Length: 94
Image (cartoon, rainbow, N blue to C red; front, side, top):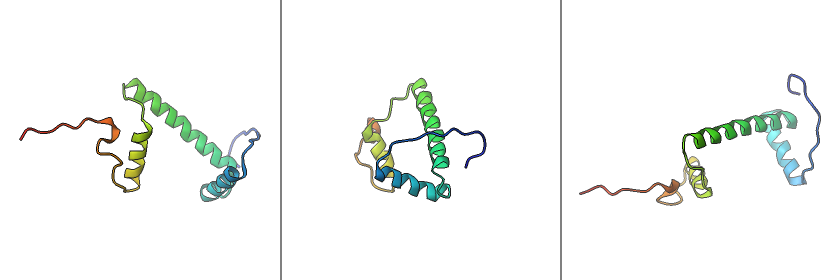
């Protein structure tokens, strides 16, 4: 169990989701689903903070197309579209 004071709660999950949670927890937290969920929650808090920061800086939110293109790049796949990210390409004068 995680260090510190904890509270007990319950979730209603379908079998596939519970199976996936247990498998993921076994890979990262010796099967401790509570520790895995705490990690996921902490990561989500950071993600929400990053979204707020980018919004504050005027960056547009990521579209599903942009996210798919970024994920493809992480996997080493070619970009999904030549104009991924909504960036406009400029032609250089010859």
